[in-house]
Length: 309
Image (cartoon, rainbow, N blue to C red):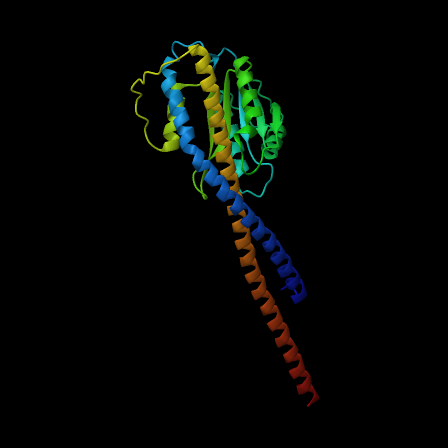
């Protein structure tokens, strides 16, 4: 059994760690509350914007707008949203594994993804957050851009305009045939689900599936709302699609931020609880060691007295 001095030193160290994790838990809880409020407040608008795009997509069959038509370029672009900092449980690892699995099994027919040093010419990756950037570069993937200055709280739509504009221009210039967003969908403080969603080209069926996944119920078939257009219909469809897709990207960032803060709060809470349990075990060990020492001293004194007599 360790000595009492060593046990006291370990108890002091664990208590210091617990203070840090408890403070981080409180900070994450505060950020989580604001992030969840922001996410839920915009979720309804985001769903309705997709629904509007679904209604307008009745014209997809006759439109020549590039946002609704898959071009011949076989290369795809994936935007991976992760965190800049760790200590958030499995938040980063889940979405990174989801991205790798999706490229391997669903998006790409190739089956050798994940071997270090392998590159996949059909896919370029944009990383948001240092954790995803480090993981993709470590796997040897082609990272064409990195965004590490995104705010971790109170995200505004202006913060994602540079990324949204870049994605829009790259697709319009036909540098990519498809554009995907890999993000973490917020379900509750205890549950977050990694998802990958295609944003370009805009597909009526996929938009409909996205709405159903977000609102949790089937979307009724459109009754053919007679929209009236003034001006160039093709130009209007392009502008609407660009703005509505930007809103979806913004919502994905909100979902990811709420998921990150929830994961971090839960991870820090678990760490604080584990530290508390360790302190209790060490305190019990300390008391046992001290009692054993006292008993040993009493025995030695008794033995000495008996020998003297």
